[in-house]
Length: 343
Image (cartoon, rainbow, N blue to C red; front, side):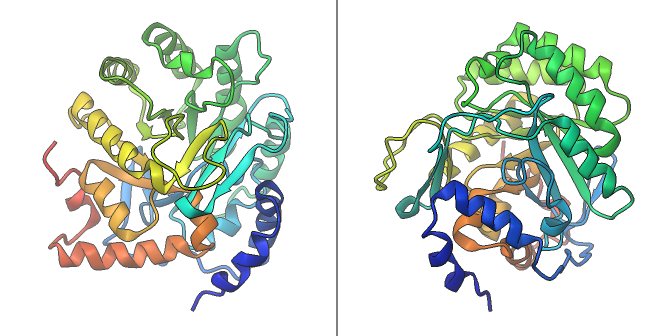
């Protein structure tokens, strides 16, 4: 039985950002129970072996302080960051809000992090340990040449990353999402792919896209032979919400993002014709949520906001539920469920 329902009220007495920091410190004290190898849940993607398809999305462990602790709670992989070349403080506080009534979070953090040098040192220190750890890279807010920042991120972090994610979809850095425009994205990915060695490159996109944007992103991503698309980041849209924090600016994540993120996943599956691996994020909190994304075309899934409400062992629970659901629906292996729904 999880003790998190008893701990959560104590954490919720703190403002959301302070509780985030406290949770990061506490996670390292938890006993490690890494994901048990389950052949039915293993996924091969971009030359990597994922013991299960449940991953931690970027944003929780921004500075790579606890990737092994999160792997120890049952995640099949962990993505740290977003990490920028130089340290930056991010946007003014308060900038992180729980929407408890909606099982959601709004953040306008602004890529606050300690910079590449700090993360690089921590990840070098874990060299040789088991577990897939990806690094999400971004550009500094004041960068004169944002493409150069991404290239630096690729060159600097590749030696310590199992994969790299190019994050151009945060709504909290002014102008960043403009890099999703076709010509800008073409220039960015040309520079990134020229800079990389053999580290897989993933691209994280926003859910707030029109059909023509989706087609253009898919076309450019496939032309540059990136290894996977992560669909999607937080949304600036505001579906009906009950919380008093509903009017806060920033990116919305959690349960209210579920339907939109699933819709965008389906859109990108159609746009890519199934030729580009997809990773689903946004509103995933259960085995049923994970299976819905997998059947819609995702090879892997990621979560973050659901941990706020369901606790650190959520990945293990989702993996158990997913195993049960796969068997119930007649899938011998998770790979058999990928894209099982009509496109």
